[in-house]
Image 1 (cartoon, each protein chain N blue to C red):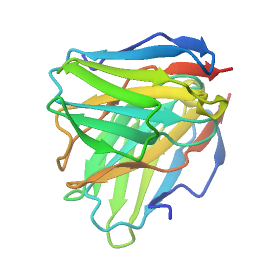
Image 2 (image 1 turned 30 degrees about the vertical axis):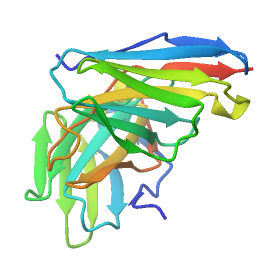
Image 3 (image 1 turned 30 degrees about the horizontal axis):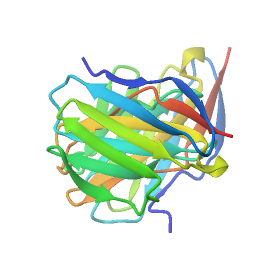
Length: 111
Length: 115
């Protein structure tokens, strides 16, 4: 049973436009959510996180939104750049729950 | 500094070999993790060490044996592996194993091929 779901396996966006990556979760015990970026044959790189007491967190071009009632979060990248092309993993954890990853979304930013 | 280092970067071994993967962090983190990642799949948790003690073992076969010599180092000893164990092995660390806002930082991984 997938506790963290990324339903879009891939996404293509034009350079300069907004990329929106979505993530849903089912475990109400999750209270901390993270986005990681991963290139092939490399480890995931931490991008941005949000705790359940917030509904938005921003860091430069990256913004994460959390809708607890819908158990949904999204990552916005504005403006998108070719170097953003990678696989993005949504992950969630709780006080007594280890980190759980979604299956990832492959983002392609087209110049 | 959020660097986790892993050696070797690549490893090819036979099914009768014994080898070890190494991981190191100098961020003062007290939790360290081993994950396994197959192609086009998310990382899967194998082991968690908290304050140098094994706190989680996700039913990993005994041919994988973790070791935490000190708070900065984490090893994964491999023996009698199977070809299906070929994967990217990722190490991560965080300030503590359980907490409301505990971010894990990952190393670059070791690409393991079992022949």
